[in-house]
Amino acid sequence: MTATFYHKRVFLLSRISDLAVDTSMTLRNKDGSLYKLQGPNPLVKSQEIWNTSELEFHNLSWEKEIQKSEVPAVPVIPPPADFLTELKETKKIEELPKPKVELPKIKNSILIWCLPVYIETVEDSLYGQGYQKTTYGEKFTFEGVMVERGDLISYFWTAHDISENFIIYPSKYTATGLKVSDFRWWRVVGKKPAKGGFLLDAVPSTFQPDFSD
Image 1 (spheres, rainbow, N blue to C red):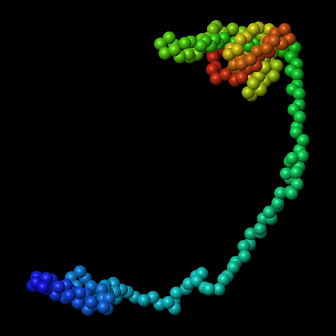
Image 2 (image 1 turned 180 degrees about the vertical axis):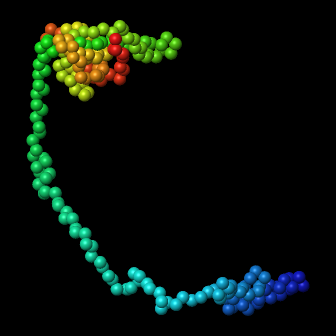
Image 3 (image 1 turned 135 degrees about the horizontal axis):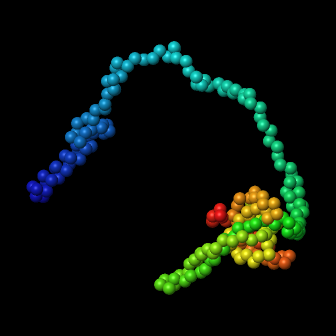
């Protein structure tokens, strides 16, 4: 056995004996000194203890105390058991036939302003895309009859051939000269022959031309 190997063996045995000596599980610092726990907070030394006999606690008792509500309970009305049965047995409502529109006599005719509107689809020669071009003609007046008036659609009868997209404005009664209390511009969206003339379907117009003259 060489001297070098002997010294290494003695050194290892001494380190093992040092580790085996401390069996009390003592906490130590990295340098081997004992780890000392922090003491109490020094601020607590001047703290005053409250007198618990003068304190009043709420909702900390172990006994349950239930307070009844004074608001009357709303009874729950269950739906009838035969509701679904009645719903299934409900007969389908038959659609009533639409009433026939009877045209009034010509004595109730009114003077109507009209602005011709022509919509033409034009194709762009550069990009090959189509767009709509709107042109307006000269305004004129014609006689007609207001068959039915509504907020969303109205019907007019006239002997003149009025095209779709034309804008019309009921002005006054031809017999009495009294103004029509409508004050609304309409756009013709449909036309069909009726009673030797044409029945026009019209909806409110977003464009309102000037018919003041």
